[in-house]
Image (tube, rainbow, N blue to C red; front, side):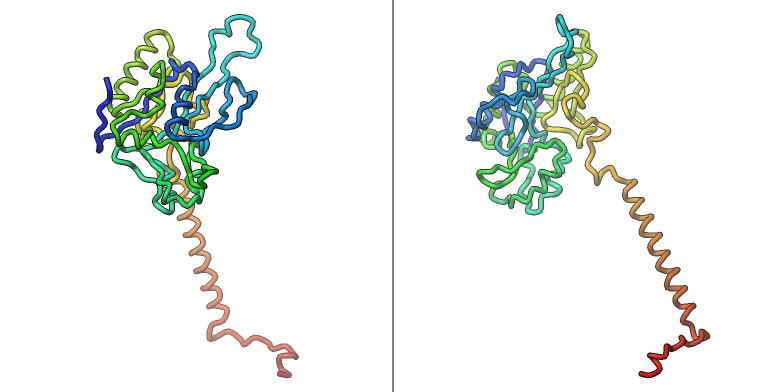
Length: 284
């Protein structure tokens, strides 16, 4: 059943990595719909991944994480590759929006994070601010670019191309509240099946206020090169110690200035003897 898409409601992705098969249909669909050029062919020699990373012209990237022991002689000790279709997380606390000097990065009527190409000046502030290394400069247009969560398709009542193309429904699109309920149910099922390592990432406010593209992972976030909940907080929301340090330094500096001025006033007061003149000064 198609999802009804209504402006004013929050939408996003729930990606269940436990059923991802690494087919890259999402990558292809993303490039086709957004008319993004493909990279020159070649094998990177890094697992089975030939995309490498997200960039200004690759907005979906299926990660192949080799989780199999190197010296296995049999079934791999029960281990398998970790697969994950990576994308912009459309963070609730979006650091890219905070640092954009032109207001090019906005939150849409679907509560997604969108870069307005016509307003972007290519300053790269958002690239440095993004904790997931999602944003990059499109070399053909010289502007910052990333997943739009298919903003144009949402405006037309269509689900994003990647979710539409996923053959295993690893990528699910819908209203955030419904996706979170699905995710909790799926997590409980996996735990009941004997996979206690399964965990949800970004489904609540612990990670940058909540991710609008959140994941069910089959290992710790660090295994997928994701910041854990302890570290996934914007600096200005988590630097009380830094503020106190700055305040302490300012107080010490002010105290030092007062002491210096006081000592200077004592040395040059009304009762102090005049400074001795040098012979050269007396001749003048």
